[in-house]
Amino acid sequence: MGRIGGHAVVIGASVGGLVAGKVLSDRFEQVTVVDRDTLPTASEDRRAVPQSPHAHALLIRGRMALEKLFPGLFDELVRGGAVPFDPGKDLLFHQMGALRVRFPSGMLGTSLTRAFLETTIRGRVAALPNVRINDQTSVDGLMGVNGRVTGVELHGDEFLSADLVVDATGRSGTRSDPWLDRLGCPAPEITTVKIDVGYTTRLFHREPGDLPGGALLYLCSAVPPYDKRAAAAFAVEGDRWVVTLGGWHRAHAPVDPTGYAEFADGLPFPHLADLVNTAKPVDDADARKFHYPMARRRSFEKLRKLPAGYVALGDAICSFNPLYGQGMTVATLEAIALGRCLDHYGVASAEMAGDYYRLAGKVIDVPWQMSTGSDFAYPETVGPRPFGIDLLNRYVRQVMLASHVSPAVHKAILDVQHLMAPPSVLFRPRTVARTLLAARRSPAR
Image (tube, rainbow, N blue to C red; front, top):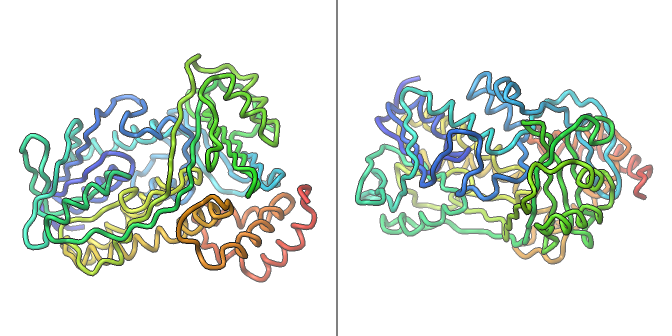
């Protein structure tokens, strides 16, 4: 693969920015990744990533994509303590009033902390001979002329020239709007869905048999519209459990140990309460809380005028409800799409950016529709309401009920949730027939 430019700059060294750095390293002579935070050398949570201490899911599509970019990454993570699992067999999923039926799906996931994943990927990217990662480096603006971005302005009146700038600044990506405005480029339309999600996390020491049947993960999702709670327990490196409790629309768990345990006691199935009340906490400090008021999507693909030499990626385009665990996977797929577009055009032109945003929009569409559609099961959710969402959610409820007894329906759900298959598989005549028959046998009926 030939080089198409001399220098690329990535703003933000989180997972999306690091993956972008790897993709660009194959296409530019030099890549500089800058981040305003102090980047730790060990697997530590970062101040600039407030969601880092909480339970994170890497979807199986994301794991596979990362493995292709970083060969041997999965084995490296497992050697470091990450926990491989089969989502059909090793996950207890309490949803719509009962547990999904467990079965060997043949799918392979990995459970680990966000900090461990990010640190491992950062080590891989930092080892690339043409990549520099500069922390404690803040970007104050974009350099450019005549609709083309030519670099970034760093705090302290320093400048980095670039043939391409990738904005991976996360939810703070909207601070690039005035930067683009100064170059005569309009800001994208923003869609928000107010969900008022909040959750609280504690770490516990992990012992064999803490969860029934040797399960390695546990998820509990509310029965809308009245019950807004959610919970997760993930086995992670260091023989620990990451236990996250919370929910939608102010159904947030307290941070003090007593209130946290009481929240777990109130969940509809006892497994998580048993774990919280019997496992030994890693420390005695109060739990850590994270508040996420709204999901947000910036529709760059609708803009008619785009600057050359600039694209946004990851949460800077779309930040999902984190309860669905889609963000890291989507950012990875967007970075891969960027690489394909650069290969096709051979230059970071405005036309290349337009095609990239169209591809990124297609990557985003399905997880955005799935997550916001589920959020609208609650009447308190505020935002553009998708047409026919109530009818769709009624059918999805039947699918979830069917998953309590039907391995085939459960497998179809897993394929969709992990972005391995389009949602249309749930509407195939054979799946619809299985769903409607199996839903009648659900113990939650």
